Length: 374
Image 1: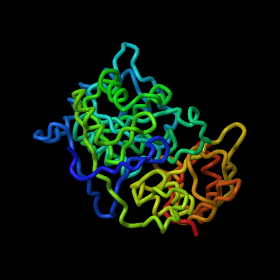
Image 2: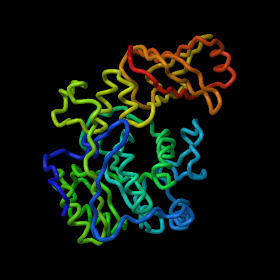
Image 3: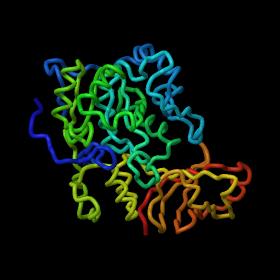
């Protein structure tokens, strides 16, 4: 059984109840419980073993792209749409792309430090996958909202986790929400075992699953044992550096200081980008894409882009100092960013932006935020 009591408060795991974690600036503390407790966690597989085990899968399936670069090498900054976006659950030959792997369960919108801890545990137990659901907004009638991480930037973020994850890039795997919406907790675990054929599951102690979030972590452990899978339950890691009152979390009474996408979005809403960086474990990167209808404009000291060009969540309106404009692998310009109701303005004290802009005919702008709103 799990040590300690697992919270049974209903926290629906589909929209804002990310697997919750407790974070400190100096270290993250987490605890795991798993089936067959006499056995220690499996050591990280050698790179060659992982490559052999998943070579056929990797060549046929990618949700956000299996890295083609050596472990530890971060992808190029601007291969935004070079990745194959494939949401198939089963390969053409009937094989599950996650067969034999260990899946972390959650809604990985922010790819924050809590999600990274899940990936770390999955990588210790086997080849790591992040399993999430797609199509929830449409099925449940939610208003669409901007993602925290641009879809085209997720591969870069996951690649940055390589040093934490046994020198392996966690892969993403998506399941259509409509195909699991009405599954009971038992049916969901059965799908993981018999259809997707995963060898293990990682979840936070507050994880809820199954129709109407009927199942909790205790039930997940029990069902995984019945179906011959290992279950790793990670103890909640709370954010001790800030309390809920600091962020005025009046919109979500369930917020108790856990690292979650909800908490990240609340930090965006007040323009506290320093805190966003703490929660994400990296500076936030905003990506803008020019289109035939919406173009960037440039002056000697400024580039402006319509807010409709943003591919992911922008912080609240205001002035942000100590930012960086990444033009390519070698050109990083220190700048300040001004966001108003219609435009994102990138300003620098160093001239020549219009020259760089004109010579490169930029379609994408990548901005990293280094300071909070002033």
